[in-house]
Amino acid sequence: MADPRWKASCKRPSDLVVPVRVDPGGKSGPTKRQASGSRFRQTSPGLYVPASVNSGRVEQRILEQGSRIRSYGAVTGWAALRWRGAAYFDGTADGGRVTLPVPLVVGRNRLASDPRVVLSEAHIAPSERTQTGGIWCATVQRALFDEMRHAVDVRAAVVAMDMAAAGCLISVRLMTKYVELRPAWTGVPLVRQALALASNDSCSPRETRLRLIWVLDAGLDPPLCNRPVFDLAGNLLGYPDMFDPEAGMIGEYDGADHKDGERHQADVEREARYRDHGLEYFAVVGGDMRRRQLVVDRIQSTRRRALFLPPDRRKWTLEIPAWWDVGDDLDRHLIRTQEAAYLIRD
Picture 1 (cartoon, one colour):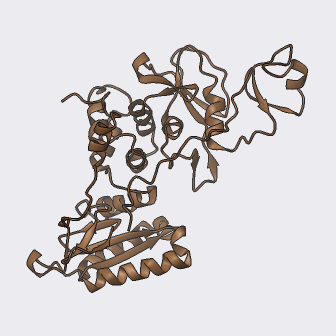
Picture 2 (cartoon, rainbow, N blue to C red):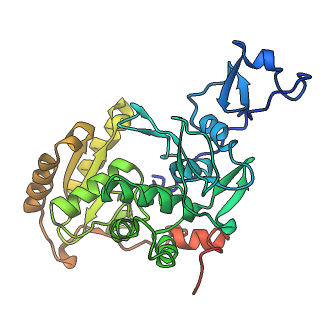
Picture 3 (cartoon, one colour):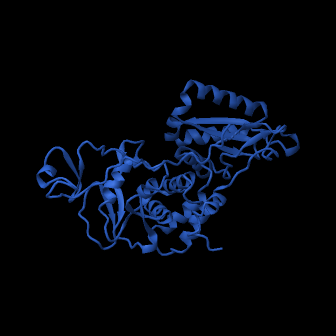
C-alpha cells in the first residue's frame, strides 16, 4: 500500500495561452478589428486570447489575470499556491459551485476593477515575489499568509495550511517562523490560531475538516494523521486518516472515489483488518460533514466502544519495522530539496 502523503500536488499545464496586446500588423497579436470580433476574447484591459481558449481552466485563468502585473505586484493567495503546484487550490468554493476571482496584490498601483480579480493594496517586498511560469507570483509563504489571513474562519485557514503542506510547498513549522516576523499585519491572530491546529500530514480538505470536528467540537486531543499502523509481525494494516493510539480508535473520511467497486471492497477489507486487531473504527461521508453534531456523536460513541488496551495487550503497533522505508518527513523533504532555504533561521 502506497504512502498516501505527497499526492496533493500537480504540474502546471504546458499548453496554456499567454494573453497578447493588439498589434496593428497582426503579427504578435490581433489587430484592433480582430480583437473586437468574435475570434478573440479580452482577458483584461488591453490583453486578448483566441476565443477558443478555455477560460474555465484554473491555470489559464491565473495566467490571464496574472498577465496584468507588470512592474509591481503579484498573483497571491490560492492562485499563487495552485500556480506553484498545490492541487487542492482549484479556484472554486462551495463544492465547485462558485468560481473564485484571482487574488492580486498590487500595493498603490492602480488596476481597473474587474470581477475576475480581487485586488489588495497591501505592500509586497521585492523578495516576496518571483517570475514563475511567465507571471509575477508571490512566494509560497507570502501567498499562503494572504490566503490564511483573509480566510472566512479558522477552519478555512487550517485547510489552506494543511493543503499547502500536502502539496509539499511549506511545512507548519516553516510557516510559523515566517508569521513570527509579521506580528502587526491584519489577520495575524487568525493565522496563529490556525497554525496551532494545522498538520503536515492531512491528505485532503475533507480530512482536515473531519480532524477539526474531532478536536474543536468533540473536544479530543489531536489525532495522528495518515500514520502507518502495523500488526505485531510487521505487516502493514493501513494508513488511517485519523488515529487515536490511546483508545485504539480510527476515523476515516470516505470521499466519492470510495464508492468505486474495487475501492469500496478495499475499504471493507481494511476495516476488517483493523477490527481483527482490536481497533475500533468509524467512517464519515460527504453528506455527514454538513451535520457536525452527527459526526461528533459518531466520534464519541466510537471512542466509548474503543478498548483502550495497554501496549502489552495490543495486536497492533506504530513501531516501524526494520524493512520499512521511512522516507523524509515534510521538513526534511523541503530542506533536502532546498525549497526551505528562504525560511531557515536556525
